[in-house]
Length: 153
Image (spheres, rainbow, N blue to C red):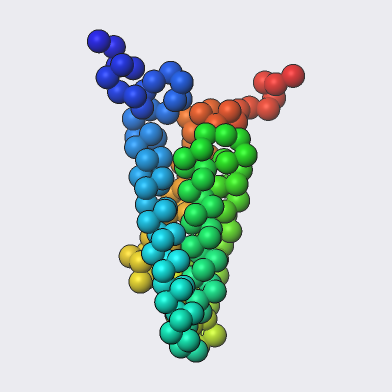
């Protein structure tokens, strides 16, 4: 039995193998979990009405996590572009809000990106960077039909 019949991640139609396929699966599972957790946090903070919260930042984070999930699941060029954009925005928010939470915590309030995502085990800091690395990996780009434009045409 050859390797493509025993390991679907190495199947010719998939375009992803080994570690890259596993990383994609981990991102496809962890991002929806983070989206749900931050979404519930935002709803709870809105209902609670505590002025020290920033529920809308957590809600934005939840929407970005859900949006990024699309590209980890759907193997289309538009999904790759959507996820790449969402991850760039997410990484930017994480870094800016993380820095501002140290400089002026009263301005930021409690949210998912406070202190670089400390309440979430720093996943909000690490995950978008891992996601971006996964998306730009040559195997991933090839699986999404994103190749060297100089070879076209």
